[in-house]
Amino acid sequence: MIFQKPSLRTRVSFQIGMAQLGGQAIYLGPEDIKLGKRETTEDIAIVLSSYVDGIMARTFEHKTVADLGEFSSVPVINGLSQWTHPCQALADYLTVWEKKRRLDGLKLVFFGDFNNVARSLVFGGIKLGVSVTIACPAETIDDKPAEEYADVVAWAKEEGPKYGATLTVSHNPREAIEGADVVYTDVWESMGEKGTKSKDIFRPFQLDRELFKLAKPDAIIEHCLPAIYDEELTYEVSRLPNAVMFDQAENRMHAQNAVMASFFHAGY
Ligand code: CP
Ligand code: NVA
Image 1 (cartoon, rainbow, N blue to C red):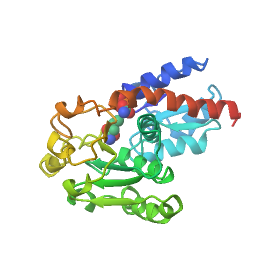
Image 2 (cartoon, protein in one colour):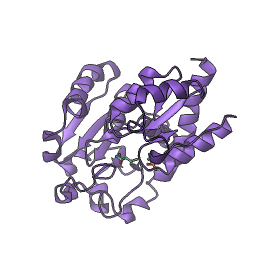
Image 3 (cartoon, rainbow, N blue to C red):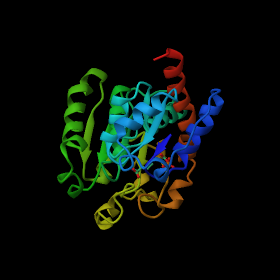
Image 4 (spheres, rainbow, N blue to C red):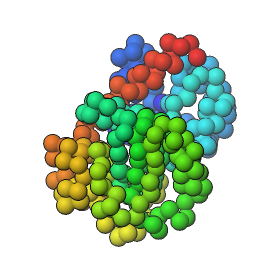
């Protein structure tokens, strides 16, 4: 397990999950191997492949985890990059399924920055028949590189009809939440971005009780955690019976165990 950034859930759920599957996990923090600083990603991937059966990596640039995948001979799992957070989306949709007993035809609305978590919710949601609305301030998408916004919108437009699902980008929180089965939010500034954004532009997108009232009465509230209360959501909303963030956190482990079991049992 290679980490360039801090973690509670990802680190502990992979460590315990690997033990549950009968294996063991080794934690390599930012200071241990100094990925990209002490030696190249290519050399690290080749060396690790001779010792271990799989690599999980949390990186700043997506290229780093992609390079690990390219140069290693064992499976590489993305434990969060600037671009995506796929293990999170797997746990999130597992949690939706547990609560709703269906996915096809549901509507998920995400409030905040069109970030790594939002993109993985789009990639996973469309393929599961869940229509996703990203409600974000207009100013925050203008300067995003193509792979972080325009390419995702184009992918959803192409793939959506195959699964009967759509991606909508909205800048109006009260309109976006109408008819939502799942209301999702995440921090306005992701790791590595602190101090780069004006929080004022995000405030209308804060999930508070008044906004949540406009969702379906049985809507559930998701958050990948860690949360900053009174920024992206109020503490009050986070403690409603509809809030399922701690189920999501637990499901990280179960969803990831399924990923690891499928890799290791398939004999890649
Ligand atoms: N949700 C999530 O990935 O949490 P950590 O950053 O604590 O791993
Ligand atoms: N978007 C957040 C998710 C943290 C789990 C980040 O990248 O910091």
